[in-house]
Length: 625
Image (cartoon, helix red, strand yellow):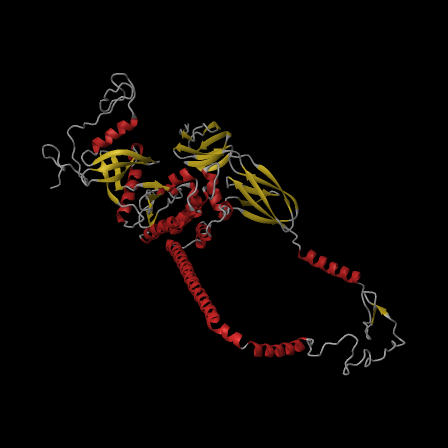
């Protein structure tokens, strides 16, 4: 029998977790003004009327509900859907992290289901780079997950503290996250929310953990979101995720690349004034090269990140194992290079020591030879001095005679003396011959006479004429190769504009597109329902690409609903059936809803930053007489 599983009186407490329900909770909540105790459930201090401290009321509530099992210590963080607390597991005597769904979301069945689905996904996973989950459940309307507490910080917190992460740590971070992704992808799970806030580095071990599977989805499970609904964080969403296409593991790889880009450079790959602008850039624009933002960055990191954030999924790594393998190969190569460096240094040191030993031995031999010479050889040389000198004199005379000869082996001439074998200068020289009568002396470039070849070309063109002909030919070739048209690239923000040229629609900027047009000034009209049309003038130059871009004024998403469903008209243009969320520019708009058999309704709105973002109509049936 589990201790604490029964209420006083022996009644068993239902539920998975072991809790002992205290008959009386002894935690006090004091008034910040007069230090009086707040009665449970009171909205104000009974003594001075001061409002209760919300965080203390919350802690008191949690400690009361989880009494006997978890002792709540402090709030670790709060997000859009849940808050995370550090608590002490009283029974198992260990620290845990408890993630609790926020009260306003605990009443939404779909959000609760998604939260519990996260726990079910977590429960299947056992990997050194994924935080283990201990328990989950619903207790007095508190929906919670209990997991291992990691003493460390998220990479988002690290970026706030130091702007960018040390490049030497990035391969380990990339390898750890890629390893976790490879594991969950094999389980058929796509995380869908890879970002710095969901990557935690443990202080003691520097191990990397992937967290928050709140919007992860298994291929076999049914999605809890509407078709085409975007889930995730705009800075890290893949193009196919933004476009509402079917996503797979390569979307996680794109998000990993965007995360590593921010860790390395201190800024996400795309930034903008609104989420929609960021999403547009993910689809249509290229991120600034990392080498420009971070001079000297490891080429391996640049290679990994650039391939991860490729627009087309087919150009990315096709699975996370490829990233892990690439990093491991690089680490092995570096380790081998370091080993070779150490071996080379050791060998050089050994050679240096051997050389020093050899030099020392040679020096010792030289000293011994000197001693031997002075003790034994020198007396013997002095005894035989005269014969040696005469013999050396003969050798010296022979050497002098040899040295007196020139380099060709001929004896050097004494001034004023001519050897018998030498002929006087010009003795054998041929007599000069007169030039032929029919050839005139020619003058060379140096001013001396030079002979002209016997055969000359029949006709010689002037250099200027040849150059002119070559220029004419080159000009004709260039003229023939020069393009007769130019290219215009069209885009807009928001990317929804129809582009009209000479009264004809030539495309829509939902995707950036290009057109070839004749040279000269061209005028294009950009139109989006709900916005004023705009003219864009572009000068087309043959062989070059010009940009035609228009940024429409500020806008908001505006939702129109009606009961029953009706047809929406905004400023006289049809927008389809209700309910509908449309993009409207700031300013005045006339919104009208019509339906057969019902009276039309309309309302003018002045859309600005403070305006409500929705409008509801109640349609009334026509009174047919």
